[in-house]
Amino acid sequence: MSGKEYNVAVAGVTGAVGQVFLSILEERKFPIKNLVCLASRRSAGKKVIFAGEEFTVQELGKDSFKNVDIALFSAGASISREYARYAVESGAVVIDNSSAFRMEDDVPLVVPEVNMDAAFSHKGIIANPNCSTIIMVVAVKPIYDISPVKRIVASTYQAVSGAGAKGIIELEDQVREIICNKSKNIRTATFPVQIAFNAIPHIDIFYDNGYTKEEMKMVHETWKIFGDNNIRITATTVRVPVFTSHSESINIETADKIPTEKVREALESARGVVVRDDFKNAVYPTALDSSGRDEVYVGRIREDISVENGISMWVVGDQLRKGAALNAIQIAEGLIAG
Image 1 (cartoon, rainbow, N blue to C red):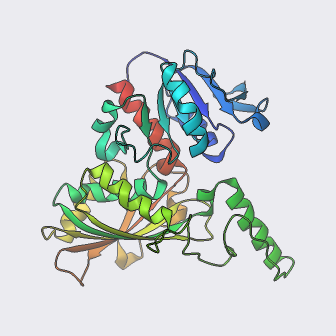
Image 2 (cartoon, helix red, strand yellow; image 1 turned 45 degrees about the vertical axis):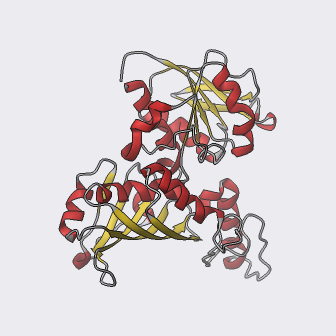
């Protein structure tokens, strides 16, 4: 990075991802000159701590971005659609963590390990992909670089914190009711059915084709990130009673046959990937391994015996970090590094 410092705004600073934004900016010593902490009216006046200093949260408004260089948004799609343009008009580069701009043709959709070059074509806004997409494409890219990927079959097992703080609270409350109070009358508000001791094959709304919005995000976003609409992709996304980190079972079919060892070597040398793969000693990554960590973890790498050129693997990643805040901050780092 250059020696220059930047004025940075965080919109949605009191939310789950907003708080991770602050911790990662501090951990990575991002060159901040001034920090502007923004949130909704109900959160205005609250205090947040950054680098040992107390900051007062300001209400997000159209005049919030004066002299801001980089605006990190994680306040939801409707807020991004309303306020991102004001940030751009003020001269800031917006890196948006919501779904608001991901599929717009003139907005780059960026995962630095995969397509950082796309970020430099921005017109003021850069979109952060969906968390499950980010985690998947980081693991797929080293294989795609060896041979074109023809097909991906993905099943995700997604943590409740992907639904925000309310998802964590609902799981905690349900477990307490079941274990401590022996209750069978379990309240559901965030998830469509009971999440405690359960797995729910339903994240976001259903489309007429039987897929959920979350599943179709993985299809369309992967096409855009790779710039390859020829990849056939199908996904099943499942919510599981895990607090942090998404897990994904990924099956890939490539144009050419790739020996398993070559796949493993490519992943071991890939930026942002940690391989834990020794089945003889029961070594493989779990959600707990990746929680609080920046890397995407890969294991259970093996030949898919059902197709000629198939690879199966198990992938986990912290969706609040690499799946959200870290990815956005890495984009900002890439921009200022040039």
